[in-house]
Image (cartoon, rainbow, N blue to C red):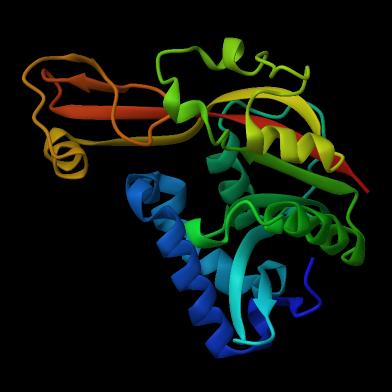
Length: 248
């Protein structure tokens, strides 16, 4: 890893906060429909501002601009047991309503623009994530991880997908593989991690297509099919993620 790279938090400066937001928006622009889970659009931005010292940026000293961003929140009275099916949405909702001392770091998103991928930045940020949890005196990290290659296999069930391996016997999914090689423990799927239910017109706008009948439809970037219900006039997308934990 280049010596010109340094970890800072969004609390470092207003300029870094703006740059971090731009990095995240650029990295996730094609999946903007995920911003419309209730937990996201009601709470996400305010949580990042409230816990600015939990938002990590990998900054290139030469340009003074981030090349990767990791977002997280502290969670209170939470352990590794009985993690719910609601996954990512649950992490956000739990962070909004603290109930005692903080015990865990809840991972929310890793954002690396395409131009900076495959450079080892993701694993560097995973190390920084664990270091952050340790520095805050937390017991560990839990994250509802979005398996990066699942979108290529939307009709495959998440329970089957998570068992796939590559030719070397490692986890098939490269992002899950990065977590495991960084010390993470794969717990299992959270099948309703991010749920978006919006009018059919919303989905037609995002997918640039029409839905003439009820049923299941694969859309670009989605990990599972979108479920269209013409009688109700809505489309429901329930994205499964994978719970991964790290002990400190």
